[in-house]
Length: 178
Image (cartoon, rainbow, N blue to C red; front, side, top):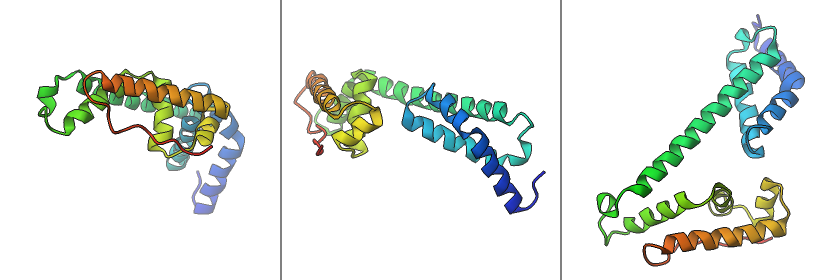
C-alpha cells in the first residue's frame, strides 16, 4: 500500500485523527487514565509497524489491537502480583537469614501484597513516582484533600501491616508538598 515514508506518515496521521478518540474511549473503559494513554500509544505503535496490514475496517482492527494490549498489560500485572504473593508467602528462613537486612524487605513485600490495590497505587504514585499529593490527586481524578487523607490512611495501613512481624520499617513514603 504505502511505499514512501511520507505516505506512511500521512496514513498513520490519518488513522490517528480518525480513530484516536474511539481507541482512547475504549481503553478508558477498561483501565485507569494513565494506563489508557499507554494503551493508545501502544496501539498506534503497532499500527505503525503493521501499517501495510491494516484492513479496510480500521477502527475494528485498532480496537482489536487495543484489546490485546490491555489483556497483555493485565496478564503482566497479574504475574507481578502473583510473584509478590508467592514471595510473601515463603517462610522467612527460606528467603533470607533472620539477621539479614533482606528480612525487612520480605516483611515489606508481604505488607505490600496485603494492601488493597487503591492503597498500593497511591503509595506508588507518591513514593516511587515522586508525585506530590496534588499531582497524585490529579492522576486519580480526586480532590487534593481526599487524596491527602487516603494517603495518610494508606501509610498507616502499610506501617501496621509491616509492624505485624517485627520492628517498623524505615520505608514510609515522604510527604510531598500540596
